[in-house]
Image (tube, rainbow, N blue to C red; front, side, top):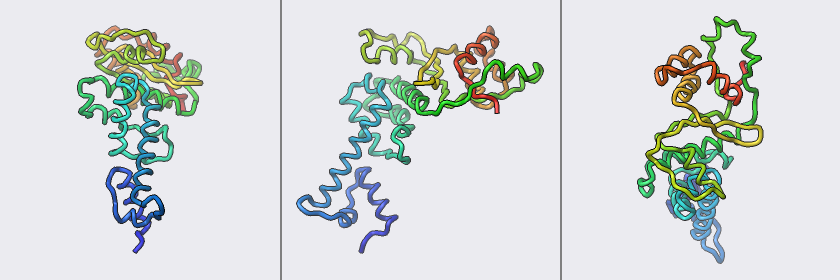
Length: 255
């Protein structure tokens, strides 16, 4: 008896995840190539295609561990996390968390954060450009109302904080970069990933700026965000930092 559509779909997903299904093979025509072999070929093709897509999305991770290691890690990820949407650029949101727990990479404790940076850059690159907050937009707001203002980060803007020097790891992993080493104990990094007109990039933040933007992302008022930043650095200068962040296009235009 043929499988119902829902059962057929479930069996096919299970097959792609690595579970051979006799009942699924019964739904596939076989000639010179048996049905089970056809399904295995298709599963291999899907896994290889998804692994290639992950290598495109996480180029820094691949540069750090090498193509062969990355290919196996990507295959293991694909085996437990198939796409839930049709756009390959949106596949891999949980890859960094997977890398954190990947036993074969446990001697590279910074690798999950590298994956987070790659993912943030990928996300920013594929976000459509949109209006950004400018100085002129703030001129119409009364001074006594500015502290209560709640801003929104522009689409594609992400703050990443790590106890490892992600900026240096990223830099030496780029094609053509000079051969050098990075002192993993040399201090962490706070980075702001941004959507640019034609690409995505990141800039360094101070710890106080990262805290400030984290509060803004959490829908805190400017006053609340400044207070939190000052607990990190009592010398935090809102005027200087805010002007720089505005110039970078960090915030979405007021609605």
